[in-house]
Length: 254
Ligand SMILES: Nc1nc2c(ncn2[C@@H]2O[C@H](COP(=O)(O)OP(=O)(O)OP(=O)(O)O)[C@@H](O)[C@H]2O)c(=O)[nH]1
Image (cartoon, rainbow, N blue to C red; front, side, top):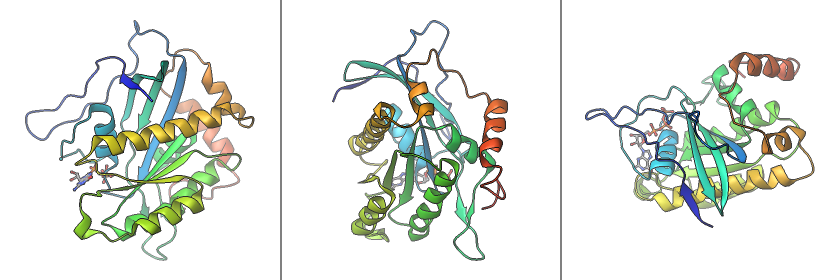
């Protein structure tokens, strides 16, 4: 597989504190991409969601990331000769409720992203067992928003460089991924661009496979669409509420 970053839009970093600026969406003169793939990266606090995205898109590890406000990164890439527009949505963290340790606290903004996306990267840190325990409720939450059909997901155990601090065994990651119907990758955003790239590309391929599949009108419709636009939040909100009205009691706390 050959992958090449399309345009040279880059992320900027300030001299101190490294302020990350999302890669802008397609400027007017960009050629129209053939295919539009939307990925959302989800997980608990401090697991390295932003670090993974930045590593994938820029090959760099900065180390100090802004508290996550949910930036959308867009990039045109060429994969196996096919021009593709890739949008990656970073998200604020989710957390388990203190009371029963099972319900998920999830901002509405994240629900919108879940509704919008074609595929899901679920991230935990191998050094943080509670972040691992967040994954199953998180997956169920995604399922509630997309009750039918195949959901392309990938499970990433990040911070694999911190072996001595490991709290989650490889086998546990693999078992959970198998249960959720996805692949498991251990990665280190800090030390290794290759592993991170591999994980994103695997998810990309899963999404492409789903696009090609027979089910999923929404997903097929995404394939040959014209120039991708920023998600229209009002419209998304309306459709999202419609879809969830009977299935989700509260959009902010589940
Ligand atoms: N050792 C190590 N540290 C990492 C790795 N990835 C991220 N970090 C560090 O973990 C911390 C959290 O990284 P972020 O990318 O901000 O994590 P996040 O999941 O986006 O965090 P939230 O904003 O809380 O949602 C930062 O200090 C990173 O430098 C990794 O692979 N290895």
